[in-house]
Length: 125
Ligand SMILES: [Zn+2]
Image (tube, helix red, strand yellow):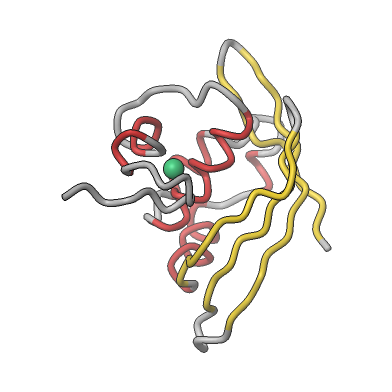
């Protein structure tokens, strides 16, 4: 029995974000990268989240803080609202450390460099 991916494509994890999180493949699109970053939060993969953040933005993030945010919430569902070649608008549903339902809305911007996509930044509501 294969486990379904966290990112809500309905695909098995190993055929979806697992390719990027565990098999070292590069996400081919900004959307695939965004999905894999959600799955990285769900699997507490802070290294992947830092590696896929654009180098110009990396100094603003710490592995400890990413890990704290990833582990203190229970990631329930990803909903893609809209996307273009280099942007993704999404909602992530999670339970916070008090068990309260929360929604994280973000309009994220991505950049492709040397055949790899990177997260640049996001606008929040
Ligand atoms: Zn996935």
